[in-house]
View 1 (cartoon, one colour):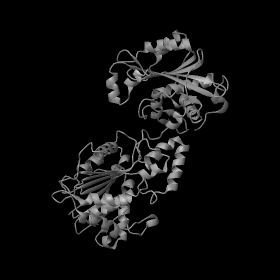
View 2 (cartoon, one colour):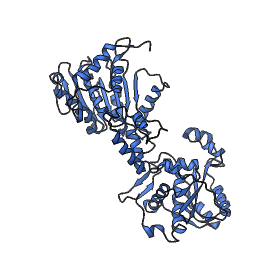
View 3 (cartoon, rainbow, N blue to C red):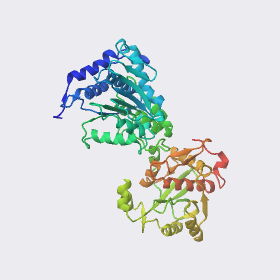
View 4 (cartoon, rainbow, N blue to C red):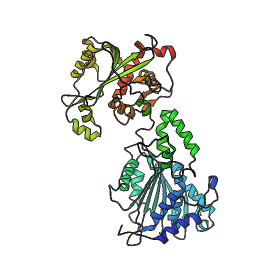
Length: 516
């Protein structure tokens, strides 16, 4: 900090610009002065108050990650106007950027309305639908968007990049990032809510900003403000809502968040949306299919008696990856299903694989939860021998298998005397048992023994939905491996069709497929 000084006058001038020149243009505060909230005032003072030895701004990058409805667009509009009118930059080019023109225009339109409401600013500017021009300094504020972007050679003084998490690519971002080299004190402002795509430019910037904030990376040009609930916070608690929403009680209403949280509790698919948009938590997938708390509530013991009847699902994935076998034991009265999983992985390079994938394969193997077969591919002969041994302990009535890549092992199992059933992975085969598994979990009518590998896979699941409302697990969209859940769904289908609670006839034929 010795190389930087705080200019109280510069900080006060910036705050005064907001509170004496700008007025709100929409909602319950329309027409009233833009009085900054404490967190906003802190950001404005820090960004414009801290100076380098040469008198220019210390901060050149601002990363603001905050939940919806906390006034970020209004703040962004104010920042853009200060940088346009009051920053002392001749020929300033200020850009509002976003994924499409509609999103980029949110900040610009708010700024345009502020200018129209201010006699001081409107007297100095020419205001158009897509630009604000200040003739006295030859400065301009314009909209740029990824869907209509074809401009290079820009000379940006300031960029306000809104909802960075929505960017499908990085061309616009990279172009604007590198368009400020000729400016003496440029400012690149990234404003976003959390996302879910860990391959995106937003996640890249989020991780860098987090490391700067936490002191892992020393980058004095970055100003970072992330308002979010921590991973293990209770997302249903008002204290957590308050932690993530600095404008709670002002622009974010408590009763609104309470209603949204209640909806998320009742509809598991909405839970990730609530956590992402209102608690600013980066989620593992776009829509959570299964509430992990509901899954954990089904952690009862699984200890089938010798000779117990069961049905198996076998998902082999690829020879170099995890293979999953799940036995499902149906209990007829009351209706209940017990899941007993087995997992297999190539033994070669398991420690390196665990480090690379950040998954504790080696620990699971030491705990006896994961079987490492010799070599660098899964040994299918080992799996067959394992199933034969399981067949001596339990009555395995049928083994459902994914037809892709499992022809040879299915033939081996058939020769060993097992009834093998080919099971497609499309909507027609997967939808009904997938919905049924969700119902059973919500009703606490399964027990899985708390197996940590199966839990990990349950938390990874993303489902696809067709126009008719049918669902199926989607391995491509899921964050990580889900093979155990897929195998469990296949086994559950056979258990309910052949040995379920009602009768030997199909449960789906009797009551129809459930829509959950």
